[in-house]
Amino acid sequence: MELILIVFIVTCYPLSIFFDTSVYNLKFLLNKNSDVRYWMSTVQVFQYAARIFMVIFIPGISLLTEITGDLFKVHILSIIIHFNTSILLLFCLFSFSKLNRLNLFLISIIKMFTGGGDVNEGFKKKNISLNFSLALFKNKIFIASYFSQLLVGISMTYVYIFSFYFKDRILTLNSMTQIINMVAISVLLVAVDPRIMSSFDSENHGSDGLKIIFISRSLAHMSVALLFLFLMWF
Image 1 (cartoon, helix red, strand yellow):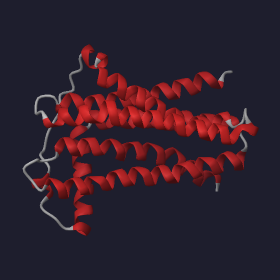
Image 2 (cartoon, helix red, strand yellow):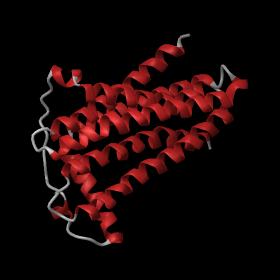
Image 3 (tube, helix red, strand yellow):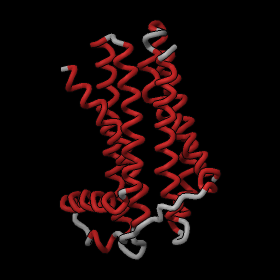
Image 4 (cartoon, helix red, strand yellow):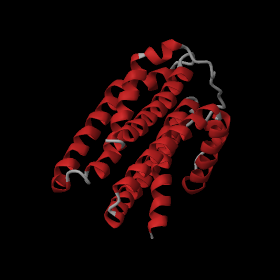
């Protein structure tokens, strides 16, 4: 039972972030001359998949915390989760063509149930430059995206570690989790998403927008992993 929970925990969280990030990738590839409304509704399935994996992750890690009562194990798993997520995002960025093939393959499977047009007509094949300038990391959208994902990473896992220290404050910790997550989503919806979508509408800047999403999120999860690693020694 414990091993099954661990497998679910270390895979579901990274997969949730993967599907969430894939939404941006598919919007970047979207052919605006096709049936945009249909393809956009199909892309939304990826967002639901991201939520489903997170819904599996949360009770999984909660149950493991209750079953084991082992702070060290939960702490290590939290570090592994964020480290794996960071590596997965970087792999997706540097294997962009493979990511596109996988995402479009999944879209084609969804299309089997929803009908609609040809996937190759709905999405354009695009590549992005893997050249990175210092200006990218100073970009306000990059900073906002990093901050948003940093808060998401902290809010989704910190409670399971801190619950060992504040056993009589579980409801307070849960409430703080919702507040942190609310701030993170607000920053994403107000400061990040509109500008990223605007960059996708511009043929010359869409590549930079997508790189901002992948790199900022990867760095954010790596930061959370290092933060938890630092806290483990205190």
